[in-house]
Amino acid sequence: MSELRAEGVANKSRGQWNSTFGFVMAAAGSAIGLGNLWKFPYLAGKNGGGAFVILYLSLIVIVGFCLVLAEMSVGRKGQSDAYGSFKKINEKCGFIGMIGVVTSFIILSYYSVIGGWILKYIGSYFAGGISGGESSNYFVSLISSPLEPLVYHLGFMMITALIVLGGVEKGIERASKFMMPTLFILLIFVGIRSVTLPGATEGIKFFLKPDFSKITMGTFIAALGQVFFSLSLGMGVMVTYGSYLKKDGNMPKDSLTIPFIDTIIAMLAGFAILPAVFALGFEPGQGPGLMFVTLPAVFDKMPWGNFFGGMFFILVFFAAVTSSISLLETSVSLVVDQFKLNRVKAVILLATVAFILGVPSSLANGILGETMIFGKNFFDLMCFLTDNILLPVGGLLLCLFVGYIWGPEEALKEITNNNKLKFKLGKLWIFGIRYIAPVMLGIVIFNCLK
Ligand code: PHE
Image 1 (tube, rainbow, N blue to C red):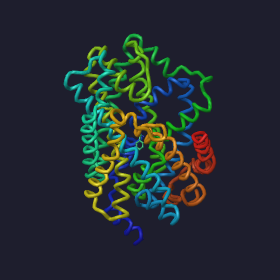
Image 2 (cartoon, protein in one colour):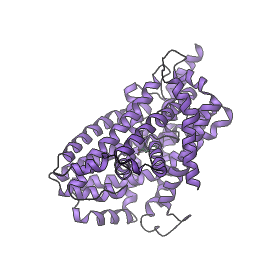
Image 3 (cartoon, helix red, strand yellow):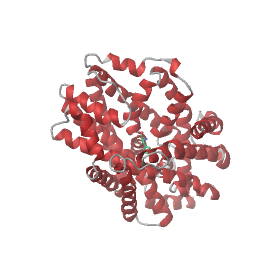
Image 4 (cartoon, helix red, strand yellow):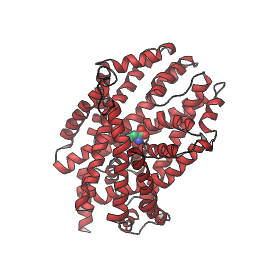
């Protein structure tokens, strides 16, 4: 009992979620980001439409749910940052958490550069919109200019830092509770506009018409990578967020809700983006091009386009910022817990370093464009390192850790609050974490190395 009380006191000083809703919004906020909005719709359309969606959904259920629960349980058991939580469970395994923290920190550095572009676009829509014919030039000249994107990158990082400064409950939870529902409403709004445009069905067909012949090994790997990135897995984020959970919550339920919301938003993004793109006579592309070049051209041709464009970029901003705060919090938590630095100093220090690390990523789209490291510019190198190497490796180590080192029986004790909760999927979860997920991740890693 006294141990429990001591834990409670320690938690107070580390911070804790105030409500389940707040936690779910924060975790879903981390999960919902550019991955849902600029990657998923195109990836689905390109890789077999409905067939890809079915594959993706199965992977979300099998791998996504298993790993979200595994990460959260490590955090809640360890009641510490990602490194400290692994270490507390097994003295030798802190390094697994450390890989996660490093991954999330690198992602933060370039995520914030993109966040900066979003800020600039919101400003442009308030100032009267972006002309359709010019959208490509507009984007290229923005990202290739040396100074302007850095100013916005700084702005985005400062917003992220300000929220994280507020702490777990008053900063992250409060911001997420406001931003996530607003994002949902805005997305529905834009979606309704999009699917009611004449000619929208072409886009819906592109998105959902199943073509099973497109399902290949490559598609499978793309889908699994997307599950990982989209659920913010393998980088210590869910461990960190899990460590702020109260001991009496219902983790199995939360770990189903979070992938569920993430998937709904990815699907809604497909309905909001693709029908409009096709209806107005454009071809969809992936990534920055779709969001920053094609969509402004689409909005320019749409009735009330500036209004919808402005709304759209605000929702993208909310999606991006709730992800970046989770990335920053993961390292802040490490520095506060391990080095006993106070939160304010930790946030300022880490946000500054992440900003600086983002500078070459930003310049790689312009003056550093020709500077290649391993055949890639700095921006692409960072993305490759995190998406293709660190994330799958981190995920695999997590599975092996929970499945074989900590042991699923011990983990289940944490998950079911010492057998107080019924967890019907327990056996399935163990099978997933010990066999299915590691094998799948092994295949991904093997294919990356080939
Ligand atoms: N899950 C986020 C997305 O879908 C990206 C992200 C990755 C956020 C890692 C936090 C941590 O865009």
